[in-house]
Length: 167
Image (cartoon, rainbow, N blue to C red; front, side, top):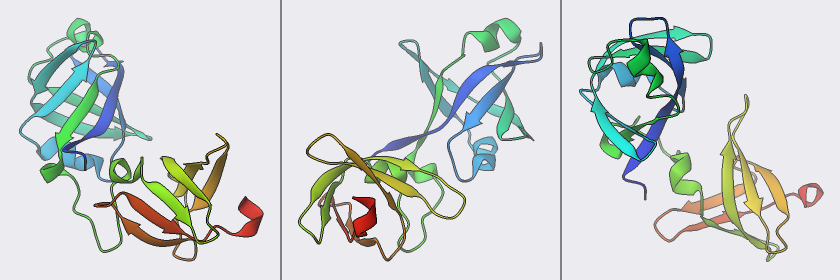
């Protein structure tokens, strides 16, 4: 189980007063503005940043931090990941999982096929899981109850029923 999550990535500076454009990786990016500090990691460095403001621009965020005063400082944070502690993440509902906890699970299909969950893709209707098979091929499985029979993150196993047409 991951102790912290990447909530977003700083893409580039925004304006001349130290704001940054962020690609959010969270279901609730507005939570970022309520945190006291966010750990920024990149280029072999890490620094704790104190959020000041957050606004939305299409599918991106514009944020200011106490520690970033101008465009040059903002530029030095390009490609930094914004890490938050698991305790500050969005609470899960029943049968919901953090993608970071699913990646790496051993996937066992009722047909006997096994693989490893490599990635989680967000789509409009439901998530889609990429499962790498022993022959290094991948299969995409919709994250719906008809296909995902059980998830056991503690033991690292996901039980599936992959429809024939997907294999």
